[in-house]
Image (cartoon, rainbow, N blue to C red; front, side, top):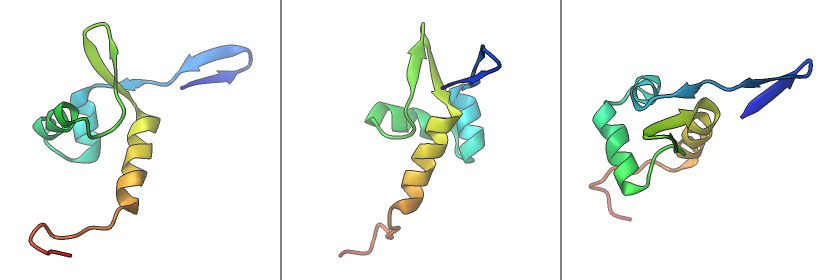
Length: 76
C-alpha cells in the first residue's frame, strides 16, 4: 500500500520470498510450499519476481493466530 505524506506518495517496501521466510522464521522451502498450495501470505508478481507487502504478511499472520491449534494426531 502507498502512503501519502505532504503531497508525495511513498510506496511500501516489498519483501522477497527469502525476506518473508526470515521474517516468519521458517525455511524458504516452506514459503515456496505454501505458494504452490495456494496458502501463505498474499503475494503478487512484479515481472517474473514474486513479492509480498509487509502489511499482507502481517494480516496473514494475524489470521493464523486466530485459528485454533490442534495436534495432527488428535481427532475431533
